Image (cartoon, rainbow, N blue to C red):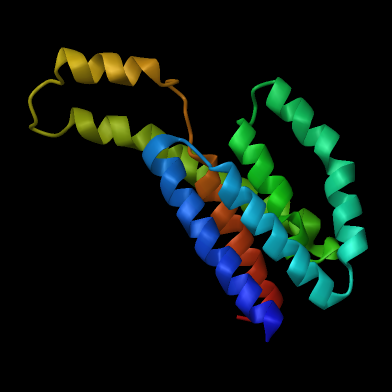
Length: 161
C-alpha cells in the first residue's frame, strides 16, 4: 500500500516536472528531491534500498560528465538520478532504453514544431518574439518529458499494468 502511494506521488511529480520543463525548460530542485525521497521509500519497500543508493552513487560520475559535455542539462541529470530507485536494478538498462526512445520522440516533436509554424497562415513573428527565441538554445529539448515518460512506462510495466 505504501509503495503504491509513493509511486502515485512520484508519478504526479514526474508529470509536474515534465510540464515545467516544457513551459520554461526548468526542472525544479525541490521536485527532484521529493521524487528521490519517494523513490528511496519505494526501494525500501522492495527491500533493495542500499543497492539503489549505491547505484545512484555509482552512476553520478557518468551523468556528471554528460552534464559537463552539455549532453544533458543539470535538471535532467538530477531528475535521472532521482528516479533510478523507482525501478528495480535489474530493470535499469530497460529504464534507460525507455527514456532514450521517449527522448527520440520528444526531439522529433521539437524539430517538427518550427516546421508546422512555417506552414500556418499566421503573420511573421515580431522582433520581440524573435529575440526571445534567440535567447534560448536552438536545439533545446525538454528531456524531462522523456525522463517522465520512460519512468512511467517502466514503473507501469513493473506493476504489471
